[in-house]
View 1: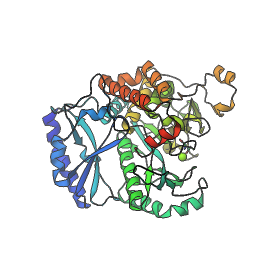
View 2: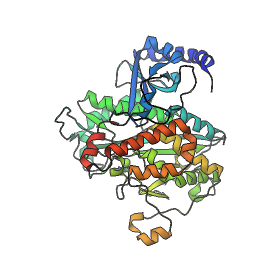
View 3: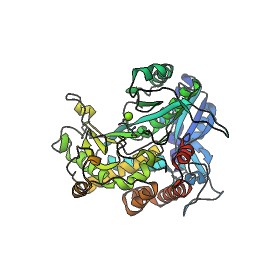
View 4: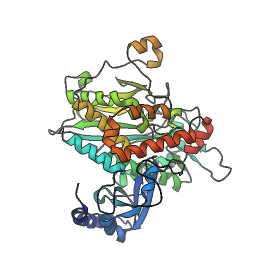
Amino acid sequence: MAGGSRAAAGGTDAAAKAARRLAAVGVEFVALAVVDTAGVTLVKCVPLHRFEEAVRFGIGLSPVFTVFLVDDSITSSPHIGGPTGDTRLMPDPAATMPLAASPGWALAPVDQRDQEGEPYPGCARTFARSVLERLARFGLELRGAYEMEFFLGHRTWGAREAEPEPAHPGPAYGAIALVEVEPFATALIRTLEEQGTGVMQFHPEYSTGQLELSVPHGAGIAVADTNLVVRHTIRAVARSQGLAASFAPVVFPGLVGNGAHLHLSLWNRRGRNVFNGGRGPEGMTREAEAFTAGVLDALPALTAVTAPSVASYQRLQPHRWSGPWAVWGRENREAALRFVTGMVGSRPGAANLEVKSMDAAANPYLALGAIVAAGIDGLERELSLPEPVLDDPASIPATRRRALGIRQLPSSLSAAVRELERSRVVADAMGDVLFGAFLATRRGEVDAFEGKDPDTVVRAHRWRY
Ligand code: GLU
Ligand code: MG
């Protein structure tokens, strides 16, 4: 990776270009956004005239944020902890996007470096980029998008915070629900279209107050960058209407949760989607099959990354379409890996793999990097897929399930962390510093929340993501 001075010189042109592009659409301020290891998005803001300097020299952030927990308490890892040190938040100028719902503002995804200009080994975005670069060595480019479910409602806060009031009463997928949230839907879709994010689909989801938004697929790191923009836009549109959005895995104990499913496809050097047009299962090519098999193989360990909070396990349960089973299947909504072929005629573009065992407590960079690292492991080992599972695994008697090798994903964060500790694939990809911090923060949240009553857990996570 480029060192300090070359990176700075290269960044200067791109920064000036980005600053002109942003000024032309009325941007005055830039929020530099970094997602911490606990999945909480943090910002540091600069006026636009400081942006070019920020691209060259970064904005300071303590390394200790790498070991923050979801409740803002701080743990430590073998490499990180204590009040000293600095990381530099280096905005990515080309990825900096105006925020139409926040007039005057843009959001800049950042890479963290140290003060010598070297990559900071605890940086989630740098990790994801390095894994995507490894994928490029196979001649493959990842495209994808996070499909976001969220709760919209009226929030009060303070010492006697009441339960939020849902913005719609249902019914699931209902037209009545849409009418209730129509001003929000209008502003959200308009805003996303106007700022260039785009919208694929929007609908009222299953639970009261629950909505879902899909955006067009992006390439590489943009998959995670766009997710930051989407979350921020949803929050800002909600706020402008006196509402609040929650991406928490569960918003009310006992009800269906919010997923943040990753849809992904791989495109080869000839510009073809390898999830279609092959001789493998459901039309996958060998490459797509091996990648999918690698993800499937690592699913129990990946769960600590894709469902990383104690609250995640109130969602990741059978019969909620949250993908709690470590299986794959075409259009199986109980499977962690749902293979989506798309409609005949659209398949070369539409075929994709949906990772459903994921919620928005996950850091979108860590999840992307860990899932792709597992897929690369499958490519390297040339793995094959087992038979798909097309039934609801919960409906298969337990003895038969065992005979078929069907396992449920970990049902608690501590169990997921144990799986992660046993597996090499995420540890090797993250490296000691990031992996150590990841384990330390997950263990910290297990200690803080596991075993507490569901309502306490929900309240502690409801407005953090
Ligand atoms: N709400 C479900 C989840 O927790 C997903 C429902 C769906 O398949 O869209 O992931
Ligand atoms: Mg959904």
